[in-house]
Amino acid sequence: MERPRTLYDKLVDSHAVRPLDAAAGTLLLYVDRTVLNEYTSPQAFTGLREAGRRVWRPGAALGTVDHVNPTRSARAGGRTDPGAARQMSYFAANCRDFGIEMYDALHPGQGIEHVVMAETGRVLPGMVIAAGDSHTTTYGAFGALGFGIGTSDIEHYLATQTLAYRRLETMRVTVEGRLGAGVRAKDIVMALIARIGADGAQGHAIEFQGSAIRALSVEARMTICNMAVECGARGALVAPDETVFAYLEGRPHAPQGAAWQAARAAWEGLASDPGAVFGREVALDAAGIAPMLSWGTSPDQAIPAGGRIPDPAAEPDPERRRGMERALGYMGLRPGQAAAEIAIGHAFIGSCTNARIEDLRDAARILRGRRIAPGVAGIVVPGSRAVRRQAEAEGLDRIFRAAGFDWREPGCSMCLAMNDDVLPPGARCASSTNRNFEGRQGSGSRTHLMSPAMVAAAALAGHLADSRAYETET
Image 1 (tube, rainbow, N blue to C red):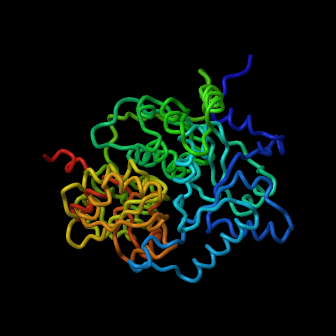
Image 2 (cartoon, rainbow, N blue to C red; image 1 turned 135 degrees about the horizontal axis):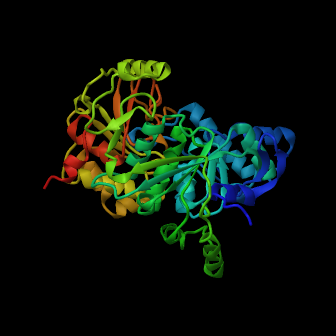
Image 3 (spheres, rainbow, N blue to C red; image 1 turned 180 degrees about the vertical axis):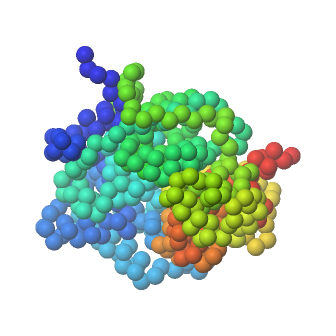
């Protein structure tokens, strides 16, 4: 009798071409699809050109501009610096010459790669997807194995549709119970990272299970799988279910007609077997999770919204203590300081973590009929042009503008200092992004991670705040 297998093992086994080194646990893995951007792909294409190789399956790749493009129109002062212009131009030439479909900065489908892939139905249960961005783990929300790869691996994938792959250990994260009012998917994953540490899942693929996970929308699951990489995971999965099937049905690149029925029947069997053994187990009580925010320079340096900055002196691990001390110095904070005492000057809603339509609706509910605090500069950057059109059809853009936010064009924007949306040194930002590293949003910038609703609340208050205070007001 075959031993029970995890969903992760099923996906890897079904895509294994042949073993490479059994002792090392490496194999040649078939990869179904990829998404390319202008930032991580140039060297891979250059390598193909120099070797005289073609792309094996051009139709399995999509290119989209997202990292370096400005999010303000030229009329509003947006600009593309010469380096970014060269990157976008070379990207366009590469996609054209190698026969890859591309969404350039003005294409109606353009947007952040992980938003575009999902909304067009290119991510399907059971797939393996590799791309040159660590947050490719996002696709686990569909029961697909997604992971980030380096430039040389992108070249190898494009030439062969395969990768040399090392099998991961497995971890199950079970979240049971019901989330409290005002607690969101971002809070679940931030609570997990704070609990197990930034390297707590290193070398592992996480499968998220439990009633609280099953109750989440696909977009909320994408947020969790997106940020799983911030605790070291190289893969994240949620077994596909009716919620996923309803999301995918009718999307442009999803199967249609009889093919849809056949695919759906196959997807229903994509789950870990009863009795499957995971290398590690972590359990969270949904009722015990509060809205979260980060205080330091690593995603695991986070506290509940009403909490206080921890004291490094209470940390027994010397390395973690030194990290906390450095983070306090960089962030300009002191032990015991209440989160509500931390004033902000900027508020950013966007990124591959939280720029989908549900995220914008959530933030708009907090902002409706209110105005952000004097001295706070807020921007909202939809994850794609499709999201932007939907938000405008629902009037969300008017809510954001009336509240004092700048409404932008799609792109990675202020998630990372790679375009013209850069924070000045010392500026402090409430951000719906995924990383709060030193200089991530600009040299000397200070980033506090949180959900879009929490960003909206901080913008209204002018300091870090609990979004529940605004949701309960009449």
